[in-house]
Amino acid sequence: MDMDDLKDRGLVLLGCGKMGSAMLEGWLAGALEPHHVWVRDPKPSDWLQGLDGLHLNQSLPDAPAMVLVAVKPQMMDDALPELRALGNGKTVFLSVAAGTAIAKYEALLGDATPVIRAMPNTPAAVGRGITALVANAKGAPSLPLAEKLLQAVGQTVRLDSEDQMDAVTAVSGSGPAYVFHMIECLAQAGEAQGLDAELALALAKATVGGAGHLAENSPKDPGQLRVDVTSPNGTTEAGLKVLMADLPDLVKRTVAAAADRSRELKG
Ligand SMILES: NC(=O)C1=CN([C@@H]2O[C@H](COP(=O)(O)OP(=O)(O)OC[C@H]3O[C@@H](n4cnc5c(N)ncnc54)[C@H](OP(=O)(O)O)[C@@H]3O)[C@@H](O)[C@H]2O)C=CC1
Ligand SMILES: O=C(O)[C@@H]1CCC=N1
Image (cartoon, rainbow, N blue to C red; front, top):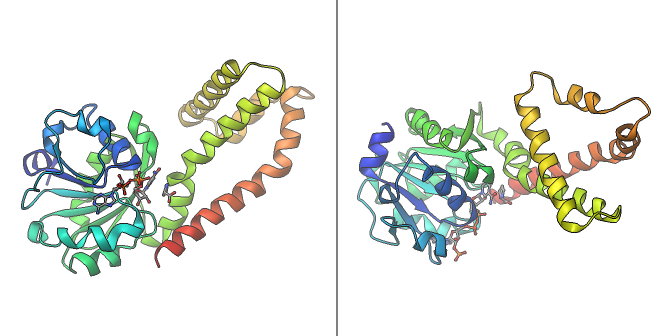
């Protein structure tokens, strides 16, 4: 199966809220056109309703190439059973739901269902996501297609085991929220030093965006890039002395709490 099969047979999005829309926005920037996509969502956004050619809450093809499951984990028992008849083993279910194990899809959709479990993140909307993937035996042959689709909205990484998914979710699935909060905190701290709100936010956004881009593209590791900013006895050293006293433990506890919640969502 390749991208042409996906275009010919269709991609179904079950749930198109924040994550589904972020991915769809990225795909519609070049990889797919609206008429390739069927969306099921009880309250579609204005953006979805404005996409010409999109099959919005229309009857589904009998055997779409792929169903992207992007409803909340708590909705699976309600949302999935009606899709059990789809595809007869030829439709791949690609789930992005936190916590929900492959075994749960097999239980709801049938043992022979090809299932790929993925953990993307919202920078997919601008083509800068990262998605981790793992499949059951039936889904494994479709991993290259899933990767191709997901590489249209960023990077992909294959996991050795589904057990890694809780930690991955806590680092890169939830991670954008930690970074957005860092931007908010940096801007507020700038305001506390007398900058106006607009300037402080512009500085904070560009600094986090630029530092992220540099960290991804430089041959130096992040530790060395930090050292490069830190003049002996300068301003950064004074700032880092405060930050480094607390941040490592705080981030460790943050990621542990998110991973624990992912484990709880398995039910
Ligand atoms: N947001 C993120 O950054 C990430 C989210 N995820 C995962 O993506 C999934 C979706 O999360 P997110 O997009 O944030 O949540 P949202 O609530 O924004 O999106 C879920 C969408 O599914 C709709 N929905 C509810 N029931 C059904 C149904 N029976 N059939 C079809 N659609 C339905 C919801 O409608 P309504 O609101 O009306 O109920 C909503 O629009 C979750 O499983 C989450 O774990 C994974 C990685 C990152
Ligand atoms: O908060 C959540 O549960 C989802 C999963 C990863 C990001 N958002």
